[in-house]
Image (cartoon, rainbow, N blue to C red; front, side):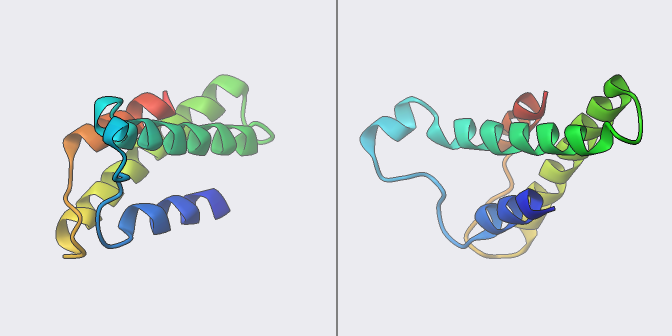
Length: 99
């Protein structure tokens, strides 16, 4: 839950999330961050669920929840008016990271 809260705060903070470093654009730093955040989210949730269901089910549920969470965050970014935009490529990076 703490990691989900950290993701929520980081992704809904006003302004741009891409550092002003010249190399950041070249390596798509923003997408790498999204993939890392949601990859860790899926791992943590999968591990938490393993005590309740089998491993395959735990990580499938974790994958689906992480992707859905990424989708909800993108919708919030697009509607909250905090200088953030909903971006389907961010959702794709979230999904790849979760996977």
